[in-house]
Image (cartoon, rainbow, N blue to C red):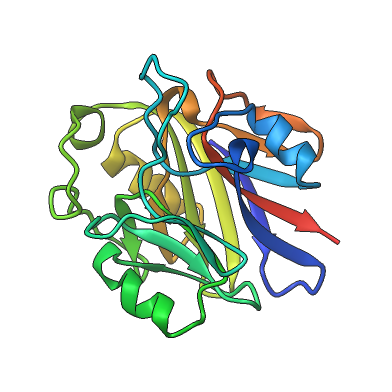
Amino acid sequence: AQTVTVDLLHPKIQLDVILAGNNPGKVEDLSSIAKRSGAKVAVNGTFFDAYTSGAYKAPYGYIVSHGTVKMPSPGDKRSIFAYDANHLARIIAGPDFGQAFEQGWIEGGLQAGPRLLVNGKVSLDVKKEGFKDPKILTGGGARSALGITRDHRLILLTTGGATIPQLAEIMKKAGAYQAMNLDGGASSGLYYNGKYLTTPGRKISNALVVKFQ
């Protein structure tokens, strides 16, 4: 596995969720998204319609940036990574998004899933989150994931050839207390300090980026 760990309490750290081409439905290289947004670190984000022949490749799930919903997804049950203006992060269930957003604390976030860890323990219920794809239910492949530690560090991780249960165990070993899966397969990519740690096999729809001011 390749990992980048970010101290969310560091005063110079900023998180952002960036859409490819700054619009839903566009695709762009992960490195291009990172460089364009001035990011030190970037990981691929939500699932999207990568296989359509059309120009519009729809992202799936909520995408929030700077307190604005860039992509709505009401009724979606999948887990959401969200953070507040102080970049303190949490993972919330899809059905809880509306209420959490109304409370006004969500500065940014993205929806992917399934949830991997809850309070340090492996916690998988992929069918409850609405997943039907065999790639998630039983298959192995390239994966991306994020985790939050008890001391407010963000772990961004990529690995090749893992099933979802294996990914949960990897995130636990990496020290995550809460964790969830991101889009994987050819989308899986991790960028750090000007170069790829894991190179995606395709252009992607959106990314979670870390800026160091």
